[in-house]
Image 1: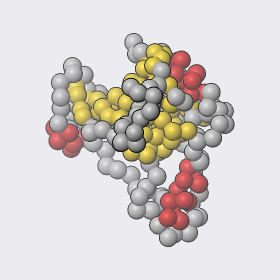
Image 2: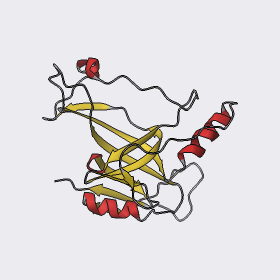
Image 3: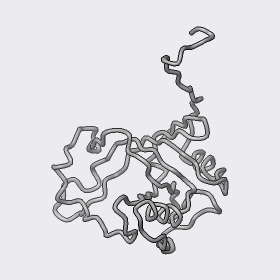
Length: 186
């Protein structure tokens, strides 16, 4: 690489890679206590929730994808900004959390001895793929009839603000604060 680059050349920022255990990742996330909104990129492996009765796929299918997220964002404010963008009155009020406890002002939720990372979804950045517990590809159509029906939103907007609480064990890799954290599971 030359000292001078033309504007047509692409440059990429290399983030240092850090391997962490799930509990070390929780520690890194807890450092975001009260620091304001933060942007992350995550690669996830999420167990697909589905109905159990008559379902051979129950607890046997994982969903793989990458996502860009925002943590420590105020949900009520985010929904009201979206309502204003859509020409609606900014009168949304979030309900209290129905499960788990937020740890301080961090994006970490603790529930029944498990830790979760609470975020708003910006974009899913890869195709979603599914694999069974043995690593075989599975088509969504094979288990779609067992997926829960989506619940109605209270936001009253066309483009919903999507929130998710990711179990720490579902995070394979996360890019945040200038680092790429690879999570060593098991």
